[in-house]
Image 1: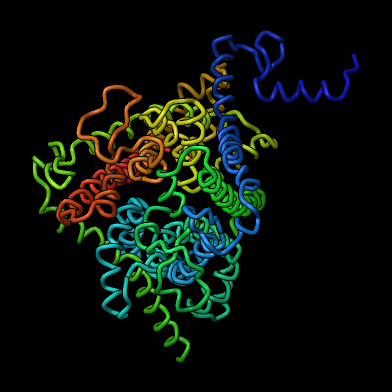
Image 2: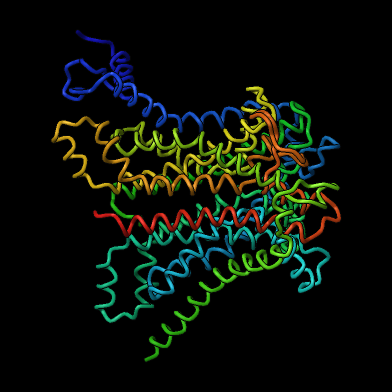
Length: 323
Length: 281
């Protein structure tokens, strides 16, 4: 029997999702009972549910956020003033605020994270490794609201008196906290990358008379560079999406951070804006739609970062190493 | 020799950077511990707040966080574990499997505040659950899925292939191998993943902002459709929204939250290393 192509395709999709029926005589289903068939179908559906969740999240963001595009004039929506009470929905200061804080955080976290990862993986004696690794895991576990609280009460006053600025709640304070929040991600991914560099590379360099230091920076780290780049990307994704700590320590003034001096002045990020304002808006209002619109931007940004990271992971599985 | 001098200096700088990374962690925990310990008493933990939260305890917030954590576990474990079993034991390397993996990576990367927006849009408004425990728990459960799935998949993959081959050679079906051999062997790893996942749910604020958290609610919830107070949100509220809040109470709340989250973290790590040492393969 010759089936049309689409029927073949649909049938194979069906088989992939629900498996073959028991009792059809195929070797794959021999000895299988209907109970097992049922359980395995449930397991399959749960496996596929993750795709459904991602789609659902995106759909609901679109449903609530897209109306902002025609409710707010484009000149207003991408303008420089965010004053929702006066119907000014300029998202540019928020987008730049997020970018500013994130880049400042990565500038702090990149050298710290990479050197620490190299130290833990290549240099540190066993006892130091056994202290460092659990501590970094603990850092990953500290709730962001606790770090924000600490930033407000300890770091901000310290900065204020040290720099003589009117408020310690600034882009810089946020960047420091974000840097520490992205460090566990950066360190663990970079460590994996270093781990997958073959031992023979190191041995070859050492046999040529290079010192361990030269081996690390001229052979091992360059060989792991794409993995290290991925570590930084993922750390960045973590920093862009961080909400509570940033909201508590950046001062939340929606101004354009354009000069280097803005580093020590308050800024407002996209995440902090959504978190601070969504509780007070009327459902279905223009303001409400715009906040969901900011959610769409955040979703797409992190989605792109993760697609990049995932493609590197898939390559790793094919090549057998995160390099 | 000169380059050995460079190496010495270089290594010293590296250990210094490692110290710069870990020292603040100990400082944060130390300060919260010392300052918070002054607020901790039976009354602080087991009584209701009053006088606009300035007096009394944080009991409803602790109970709220425990309810949300247990609820998240109940909702996320079946989906997470079953989904992992599919990925690790049934799925081949097809485009669908790759799409599932991509979805997991993406779920892990979505900002927590976006989960909050999604929970508001879908559970609170579209499904008419209102601001309720149910809506909050479902939102948190989706957020914890990727953590549970990626950790448990590692645990399932660590079970040697021979175990499955032997089961098949004795006439067992694939499900029998999973049910009686692979799952029991991988259980400690799966439990570690579950703890790591719900620990994230216990400490998060952004997803519960619009889905469940109550500003001030000095009683315990009666039904899944009630709001609750939760520790992370409570800490945010009393440190930013309430003027003239005693600093002692703020540190006390931070300490209780940190204690709950870190003790789960330590439990997960200890469990993992205990079973790694004990296993025979």
